[in-house]
Image (cartoon, rainbow over all chains, first blue to last red; front, side):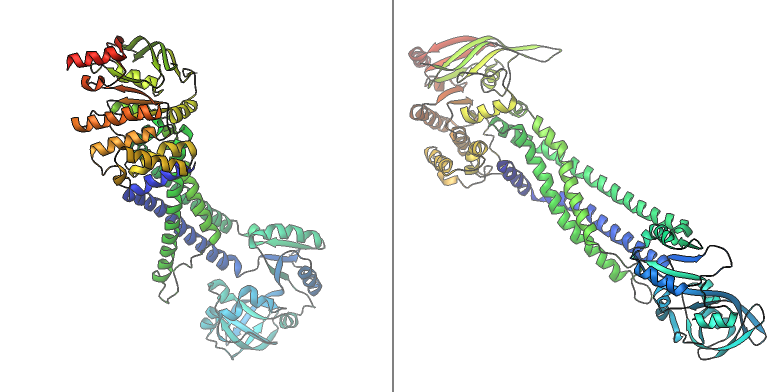
Length: 384
Length: 239
């Protein structure tokens, strides 16, 4: 074994150029894997964060349309303490109405939040363009609505209910949630204002929250439904966003496919180069066999070559891949200087890529190793 | 004296469609500690005979007994072990591993046997290289030596595991006559010193006469088998 390793090492170092070339070949494969993996991982995280992370992931509403959640504070408290893996539990009362500016009525959805958790879910503080979040009796408007109606922070506006009641409120600030539909419809305020303006009692229309792991939302929802009274139903983002979910899955699968094909090409490259190397070294192998090296040891020589090349290629490849990744975040920038895609450097993924490269290099050397085991010393001795 | 090599009814046929019989009914016993030369024209089958004795090649029929062991049915791995421990090979081409130095080449069979280089093996390697007069080039790369030095290195390699048998196929075929003379004197010296059995193929009758016994192969059969003094006399007559 030790003898075979020593011979393998010497074979590799004797033809440095060739060994370096193979190692670089493996390294390119590994670096592409690391880079593509980080790129797609980053895209995924960004997409998940944008699409799901800034929104409610699990929503509790009354089972019957038009009904409300009565004891919402109590339910919210129970959920936070139940250890279901949910966070940012935020009761909300939604109501449709109008924003009256002069002669014009703008249709709006008034959202009355009962807790500052809403700020965490929708990242409202981050979204503020001017002014502040609404305090009691104040509202915040979306930027599209504000521009359309010509309203600025600290202005006073009139809210009108479908039944014709009106109420004057002051605008605490303008926000931009990066979604035009929300920016032109949502008017944010506290729950008491909505309850008073629309003549509701102490009720909420929904309890919104996020999951610790967004992808567990469906399971948590099922568990939660078991704890809650029959009159309430639980929805999760997965059930409501099948398209997004299948898009995310598609991305994962295509990323996996790319990696598999890169891997296959690396394996084929190593196998073919090592096969040629067996031909080149067949004379040496014949001599070693005449001197009594076992067939097993003769094959270990090539397995060891594959293993060593795999390790060298993996180290080089990880360095190259991280370099590429760094260069990408450094030079592929948006006009505002942020990276086009924030790459995700996942040490576990990189370790797995490196390990897979070493394993596949060793595996690829199985074919030449078998040839080496079968080689008959007579082939060499006879042909001189 | 015991026979260390014993061949019984050896036939060797190459090819499956067009059959070529290279050896026909060869029976041969080689005495322990003897020094035998095999002569014959090229294509006579002498190299095939040597390769069969060395277990590098298998006979089509017949049995090969080496050091009292029937080799015909041995596994490849058992044969490898037998070659490593009992037989030393010297070929017409030195067949050194160009990736290693002269000393490392000499040590290779010992490394294969022990899995490492023992101090005893190292000592023996140095002694053999001194005997061969190549101690000064021991750290040279095998490819960077003269033909004579390479061949002497390969002889040292054949002897490192102190084999009972050394098989040599025209070991001086690529050397000038002075070097040839020196190499044969060394082989003869080792034969006497270490009691190693030598079986040497040569085309040079002048060299053959230094042997205890001359065997001539013609068309795959033993044509002539002259023992001891008779061989020497014959050599003198022809010279």
